[in-house]
Length: 373
DNA sequence: AACAACCACAACCGCGAGTTA
DNA sequence: ATAACTCGCGGTTGTGGTTGT
Image (cartoon, rainbow, N blue to C red; front, top):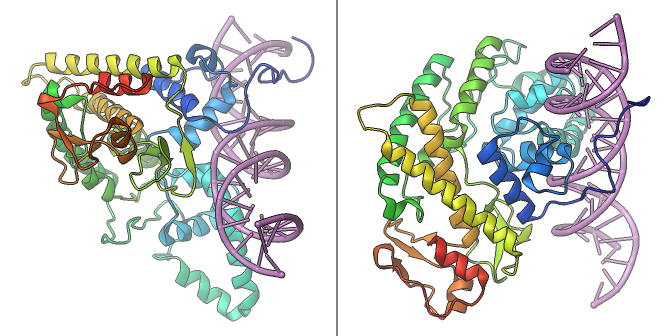
């Protein structure tokens, strides 16, 4: 090689700027199938005109299933302030103490909110008050170490402080939930259509921040990695039925930032969806083949099921299939925009057992929609 | 209504560290 | 030993949205 640093990619050959939903899906699909062992090679393999670095960033900061969306809670902000005091601008270190938050996100929140807020506070308070501020803004601050920082993320829930061992036990409880999931997915009629009747909310809402030693921290991260698919939200996209824009997908928790997938997306895009649907189904078949009395690796199995569940739900969201409010697992309703174009009452629900394709398949999008349904 | 200023945050860039051949 | 390569981190920029005039 020549002297100097080799560029990470040929900038003329790669696409830059904001990611499109189709690109996101391609990336998600590829990583779900193949993982991300080599970021540099990934874009080519995934059929993306992006540099590996860009893919990595997109995945880590946005698409990764365990990324928590939405605003930072007061507790999280306080934690960041405290951690920043200890670590300085070591954003990745701070992020490792805040489950579901990325270093980039924390960095942004610090630069845009917390830094300013702190400087305003400091300037407005006397030096005597400053020491008071430090002790009051941080709960349980008898130790200056951040290793044992804790708080509850969800305001509505009581603070839960657990040790690593207890955390593992809690994760085991999640496995119980997963067994429920397994029993549901074993029914092929229901497997590919509606999922939120699985009470994932219990998992999602029981947000815990664990008090752990550095060793435990590492352990916890591994544990979290294994279980993350089960703790996932449903990815960054969701269908907003109240949205008056036709055929639009929205980012979860981002009602003001609409992302649209036009229904005339290219054939490759829809093929991608269909391909992944097939692989998803084959996963379920594998699961069914495991005898009930043999659970070789619960965690692995849970991850697999979790992946399947998440994917299935993501597909539902992508295609705008939503479950009824009562979360009846056998019935689906269509979002208004699709229902309208299909000439169906939006209130109509569909019995999955008796579901037939409509006669008016308006375009490829709908053909695929009904193919999947 | 139009424009400017500001804000938030996703994405990019360059560097250092670790790994591999 | 070292050059080449890859990844991850922290700083910075660009862009779209919001607010104020």
